[in-house]
Each structure stands twice: as structure tokens, then as C-alpha cells.
View 1 (cartoon, one colour):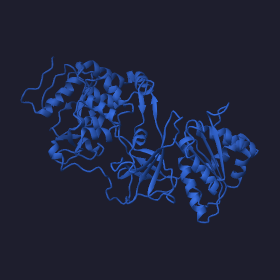
View 2: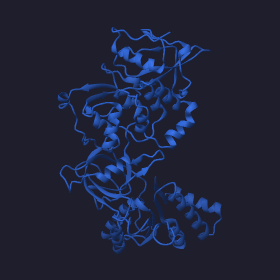
View 3: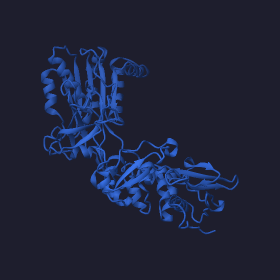
View 4: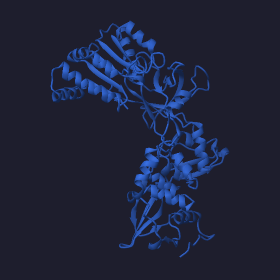
Length: 522
């Protein structure tokens, strides 16, 4: 049986639903008020069963406000069961610019909450930004300071700051082009129907503040650069006008296509935008795009590189720029690190950059007793929390507190390129906040030296400090550096403590259990 198009009298919401069903199931017959489909026409061999829910029939939404539609996936001939997959969708209403003016909310998020968290961040202006690498370096690392005076936001040494930033303009413009929306289009977005009942059984995440323009929504709330999940591909397939593209998307999301999905999407690190560019006929409406295609842009976390004892109204961030080429050939620019590098501080312009931020507490803390020895290991931006530690210890020393011995193992590529905060570290040494600074340069000299090599050279000293109750702190790369440091630590304990391998392993585990071996790694 051929397709039966909706008549001119068909309600618009049913007509839209019919179009979605007909795309997903070519030649399906459609009957109102109950939409049923011939078993011999259902195409489901290319869909992931985990995305499916059984139903005896696919029923049209009762009203245009019901934004969680279902599209046909499969009918099991042996049981007569029809499988459908739900595509979440927010209710979206477009607003005229003149009407949006008095409705648009100021995105300050300084909202009077007693406690700021990921759901209730506060607006913080950028007051200082400076490059930490020298001009000889081919990389970049930024020192940034947020002003938190008057916000009610507080932090402790060793905490993390969560930063919500925006996609860069060229990424947003590409998304606008692929979706086919004007950037200055205003809309409101809702997780409920007009009568106030929730959409999708309440499973939709709370929508972001609106009215808002398409450009600002894409910039602030859409994760456009991570690889899409299979559920996103299925949602795109539903709105692909080209049957071949729809079929291909469904295949990639299916069990049969899992190997190709793993290779073409995951291993190749293809972003959501790259995938959408490969399937240009897939143009989901905004409600579907934000509910089912693009995940919400998440905050980025950074170890705070300051102490409230020294900077009570500032939160310092030390951020290395992420700028790399993916296996698919795309130049990937880190969302937050790019924003940080390009931020305009208030010391340069009244129209400065700002971001919604919040503090996440950490157990990465100095010993309660300042006389306890500490060993710090943090190459590159792993230095960040230790800068806060040393600021704290300097404040303690200046107030007459007796400090225990402290050793910091720091590493970078070259002392003339990326030795960040060099002057400050030397000052901590001179002022007595730091007892010893051990440096490792991996691209300077005949051999590559890393912090773990320097630890091995200082094995006796490290063991002596551990025996005196020292705390050990590691910050930086979890996969490489932190693993290598743990191996060296195990060796030091085994050899210096005259223990067999099993007892040395138990000893290191006991340091973790006692809270004397702390890691802030990513």
C-alpha cells in the first residue's frame, strides 16, 4: 500500500507526526485516530533494541503540545508486537524580538542563593588574564582570575572551580547553518505542556532559561564538539528527509553497525557537528535538538591555583590550551580552554568577559597540622593546587606558624618555554614556604627527565619524610604521570623500607586509606 498523505483538514501536529513516521517507515499506511503500520513494511534491522519499547500500536499525540512523539521501529511477525522508539522533545515557542525584549532574562545567575553549586552558579567577571608560556613555546597556558567579591562565593585551598563557558563563534555559526535557523531567532523552551503537565513523563531535564536567541542557546547550552551517542543518531535519522541518510544513521546506531560506529564516530573522534555535516538532510526542530540530539554543555573543572588566605576575593585558574588534530583531521579547540585564552579581563576593558562559576569541595587539603612534612608532585598545570598550598603556607609562616619540611617535584618541557610561575616558586623558596624545589625538564638536555625520575633520585629523602608522617600529593595526568609516580613510590617503599613487593603494595594502600597519599588527577 502506498503512503496516504495527510489531508488539508488534518491537525498540524498530526501532520507533522505523520511526516516523521513516514520518514522512518517508508510506505507505511497511516490511519487516524490510531496510527498502525503493516508488519511487512516495518524496518527495524538497523535499530538498537535498547532504544525500543514494545507497544501494540503507535498512537498519535493527543495534542500539539505533547512533544514526546514515537516513531515506528519494528513489528515482530511472530508475536504481532510493534516496537517504537520515543524521541524526547521540548515544547518550543517562537517569540518576536520586540516581545522578547521585556521577557529576556539577564544571564547573571547571581541569584541570591545561599549556596552556589552546579545548578546555581554565580556570575564572575574576569579581572586578570596573562600568558604563562614564553614566546619560544609552541603551546599556551593561561593564568586567569575571577572576581568573586560580593557574590557570596567562598572557597578553600585545594578546592575546584566549575566554569560554564561558551562554544566559540565559528562552532556556533556552523551549528546554525546545519540546523537552518537564523541566529537572532528568539524562542522559549518548556518541559511541560501548555496546561502545565510534564512532557515525557517528567523525564526531560529542566530547560535552560528563556526567551533566548538561537545563537545564545547554541553557544551556552549545546555540547557540539563531543561525539554523538547512538540515541542522538536515531533522533537525527527521524528527521532526515533523505531516506539513504536516515538508513545510514539508523545502521550506525544499530547492533549490526556497532563496529563501524566505534571506528567512524568514537575512534575518529567525530563531533556532533561533523556527523550532522555528513547527513545534511537531518534537520531536527529545536525542541528535539536540545532534548535528544545535543547533550547539555557541561561545566569544566579546574584545581583552584590560589589560597583564600592570599586572595579571598579572587579565584585563580591555571589552564593549558587544548588545541589538537583529531584522527578525522578536525582541529579540535577545547571549549573552555579556548574561551579562557581569549577572555578579556576588566583591567583591559570595562566590557570584560564573565562566566557562571561555582566551587566544588575537594579532599585535596594540607594536613591540619602545618608541622607535618609534605611531598608535592605536579608537572605542568599539575602545579595549580600546589600554588594554592604554597600561598597558604606562606600566609601561615608570616603569622608565626612553624612549618614542616616541604618538597615540590615540578616538571615541564623546557625552562625557557613553559616553566610557569618560576618567579613565584623561587619566592616561596626564599620566604621559607617551600623547603626544596626539584625540577625535571623533558626537552632540555641529552635525556628526557620526568618527575618520577627525580623521585627515584631522591628515594632516601622521600622515605625519610614518609617515615616522619609526610603527606604525599600528586596532581596531573592520570594515565601517564600519576601511574608512573605510583610505580616509583612503590619501588621506593620496597627498597628503602626493605619490604617485599606485596608488603610494599599494602603500605602504599595504607597511605591512601589514611589520607596521607592524595591524588587530584584527570
